Amino acid sequence: MIVYGSGGLGREVVSMFSNEAGEMSRKAKLADDFLWHPDCWPDKSDFVVAVGDGKLRETMAARALRSGHHMCFGNFGMYAPSVDLMPGVLILKGATLTVDIQIGIGVLINICAMVGHDCILEDWCSIQPNANLSGCKIGKYAYVGMGANVVAAKKGEPMRCIGEGAVIGAGAVVTHDVPAGETWVGNPARRIG
Ligand SMILES: CC(C)(COP(=O)(O)OP(=O)(O)OC[C@H]1O[C@@H](n2cnc3c(N)ncnc32)[C@H](O)[C@@H]1OP(=O)(O)O)[C@@H](O)C(=O)NCCC(=O)NCCS
Image (tube, rainbow, N blue to C red):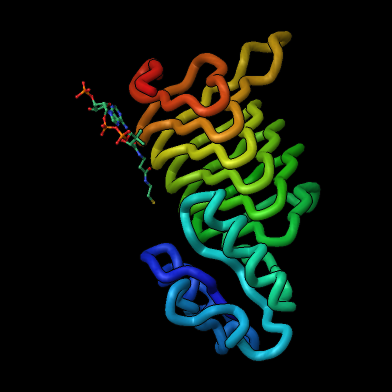
């Protein structure tokens, strides 16, 4: 298993694979983005991309796929059998996913994040440590910072939506929809960019 990424997240993911039993996990290696291009990996390597930024994950995954490698998923958290995992999804230790959740390609669910019922996580979005979600849609490439809470819409209201590429700051409490590309912080969350 190649863990493609060179930062702290990559080291965390290697350590999680290394603590798992089995041949594949004993071979987990960190591939530094700049020093070890996928063309130099062994033929048809299994890989996951471990970087926090969704667009960069997508670019790196595309590069590795072009070089003929096989994108896997890594799960070290807990999820109900009804949760579908797409290739490239990374669920780190302590993360919990409950029921009626759709997860797109290359989504990152970081340490101890909680994804509650009725959530849609679109491709390449990033949910950082201790974030807490329920009843919401997180758009493609969106970034939910550590400890942020996205509060579900009230019963009978449409699902809470965080738009494509939006950024939710660490510790925010989001009680409104966040349009695509905007940055919101604080409690209650407000727009800063
Ligand atoms: C939201 C965030 C992306 C903004 O970064 P930025 O664009 O560089 O913003 P700045 O640091 O210039 O701050 C702009 C203003 O927002 C405030 N602010 C920034 N982040 C904030 C946060 N999380 N909560 C409350 N206020 C925040 C700053 O205090 C500043 O306020 P001021 O203008 O009154 O001084 C960043 O602060 C953040 O929270 N990132 C998430 C980090 C994270 O979760 N990492 C996970 C690693 S595993």
